[in-house]
Length: 422
Ligand code: LLP
Image (cartoon, rainbow, N blue to C red):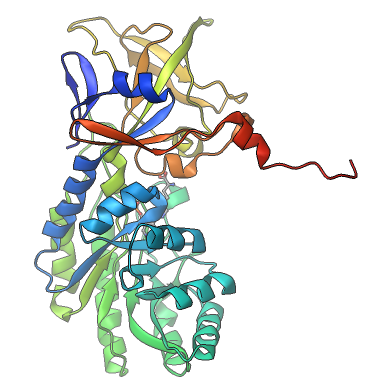
């Protein structure tokens, strides 16, 4: 459930009309609902209610706006970060280091140093050389860095190949069969404090069975590591729970059911449980509002040309992802729908949001909204075709605020410089 509903025939974010937001801020614009973000976070809190100690670390990569992070941080969320930049965002939103976990396969020495100096809950380590680097940098500071090894359980997440991470052919994690040896190596390093085990098998999972398989392997490994003498007290089970992009025909498992899988597989180990959900918290808490620029009649097909493009929302062109696209002015009941190709203005055929999508009649100047755009939307945007990044708005009840300004053309151009010798 989200808080984007029609009221008096106009799509609203909570109690604010999207027509009003578009008139004030312009289009394209991302709009987020504070109530939906809060609701989704609380669903995970409920799902892990059985675990004596747990931390829900929001995966910042899905939506890293400072206002979103502050809102979730105030609710008690931790954060999962994958770069120095994301770490600084979490800090800027007021998160203490003890609530930030640092994941990622290629942490640089600069990033490791930054995080050691600023404070961190744990590094999720993905290779032996990374372990060495963390140990060296921590020992040089007189510290022992808290770490979990990210293991690769070789489980098929049954999701899009570009976002599956738990198979042995993927670049992520340490093969689970090798994990005991790497833990032994870690235990001998001066700058390392082993605190747990980490796993993340992929994103947009719509079936719980791969989670179950992976968590069972983690449970077995945890028992073996304890027998080896390691004090495994924390399990980070990653993110990945999918959301219904196509409302008419999909209903992925609920957080409460996911929580039951965790309880059933690792609940008896007495570990602190961490999870790293991104999409399920932010995805359906955001929409992208765009204006129709032109209607163009093609041969055998019609095109709806929008002012939003693949540089603003890349998921359809990058993953062939489906997003519901609806008119902001509700179509009259019983009105006939017709198929259109919904495209952006970027000079690539790949700049296509949907093909032969059934839509009610819309005219140039009308507003449309892409649903489920709060995760991996704004964060993946670029300025391709020299289109400035688009603004972000947060709605709470009957008021809204611009939480990222639309840059001017001057600001965009001012980042380049022409050397004096040209
Ligand atoms: N933890 C780790 C280590 C991750 O790599 C990810 C996502 C998450 C947590 C959060 O996963 P989530 O709960 O959001 O599924 N750009 C793609 C998704 C990439 C996901 C990358 N890793 C998309 O638009 O579908």
